[in-house]
Amino acid sequence: MLDDVRELELWPSKLFDKYLEITEKEVKRLLIDSDKLVDVPCPACRCNQKKKAFKKYGLDYMECTNCKTLYLSPRPTAEQIQKYFIESKAIKFWYSTIIKQTLKNRMAHQSKPRAMWIANLTEEYFQSPQVFASINPISQGFIEEIDHLNLFKTKILINPNIEIPKSFIDREDFKIINCDFYKESNEINANVVSALGNIDRVFNPENFLKAARSFLCDDGLLFLTTSTISGFDMQVLWNNSKSIFPPDRINLLSIEGLTSLIEKSGFEIIELSTPGQLDVELVKNAMQKNKKIKVNRFISYMLNKREESAHYSFQKFLQQFKLSSHVRIAARKK
Image (tube, rainbow, N blue to C red):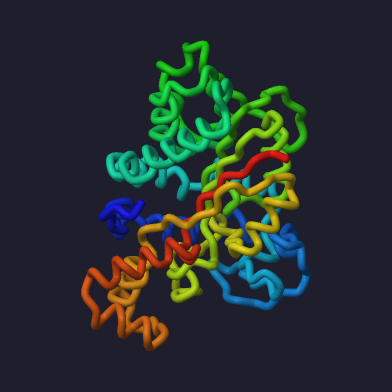
């Protein structure tokens, strides 16, 4: 998974800065309402013991004193968050501009590897898988890659956040479902469910995982991707990290918090890895662009005084020991 990929291939810096600028304005317009903000315990371990970490866009991030998860509290309601992702000018900018301009690189570095990851584990656990479902899919490229596998007889898109190609709509093997899956019972009975990039932004991750579990058949597989505060770049940059902002990242669970949450939601973890490729690059770029950012002396020395091969090897170390901020998880329904 450690291809020669760089931050700006997926996140053109000027475009991403523009996205953050619009996001801050939209958060203040749509989400900051003190009468509606809800105080919550740690979304991973449910511990109420917390300490204030920092503020972003007028909202407070807390750090759980038990599992070290970083999370927004008090936070907007589930209804406010849902409304934001429907109405926000920032989200419209994301899809109309950033996604379109980075589509080629995303296909190579995200969509195809994710589809192959799902295919390899699915074939290991099922001889003839029938049904694949994706919750809140946000990437057309990923769905196309799943389709190219010719692995599943039926593909179901639940509450898709993408424009569905017309060629998919008319096919019998594709189904589109728009529902409140927190409340409605279902008979999907999927062998595989993907929920990529969802845990970061949902109001209650435990309720989300239990709802996702209800879509699976016995021993069905759930595939997740998320970001973790345990990762190198987020630990080092902390409040200076451009990757931490509401409402895209209101839950940044630690590795320990993720493990606890998934297991208590009725799953057995069969893979938890951090194949991230950008941690070192993100820290280097942040230090170069903002000279006021202060980092650990050793880290500063390594990044400034050692060659690219050392940085490459350090990124491999972060991957190997679950210290990258990008997490992928495969779990089996118990």
